[in-house]
Length: 250
Image (cartoon, helix red, strand yellow):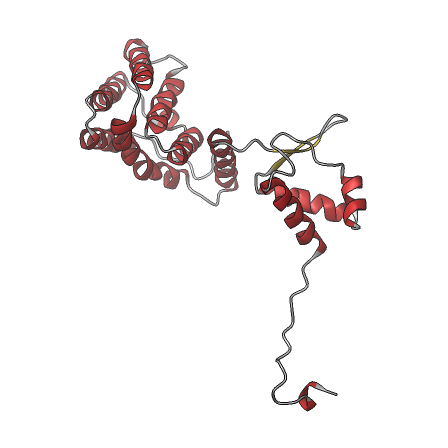
């Protein structure tokens, strides 16, 4: 009997999409990781063993593992003692994955570094506001130490970018929102804003004074004051920055 000859009240035939073997392998391994059948740091079975277990070819397994690497669930280590290992997923590892992904996008030239830099306003102004409410004494002490290093350094100090990253990273962590902190660290780590700053003694002194005002607002527990001080600082830094290259190659 053809489809046209079937009774009028027969249920309609619906085609179910055929899923590729690679997608099925990827999904099963993903679910096993997310449900803890493979713990963080565990080594997955070798490609040949997985191919035998799933009844598919090694290239299919290799494609599935590559998709899991792209998703950040596993990492592949070459060599005799290497293999596929489940990633340790934490805010720090998330930040690193975000940084690597954004850096790759910049190197490919599909994203302008200026676009990322402008995102600092979106991320760091609320970060400062929340940090004024949630910062700990230990974090304040860390900021004081960083600012003191910035205040007493010279314009040719190669650690100036390190101090700047530490200052903004600490505020991100003090916000109390680990996801926000991960984005702050990732964007700051990729853009390296101090490297593009027209650093002169005057600009250097002004930025340190702005850091001091931000820190003072955090010490006072003043959310709006901290947000305003951060906004002023970011506006100043971006105004005195050099023209961002469209494609970073270093």
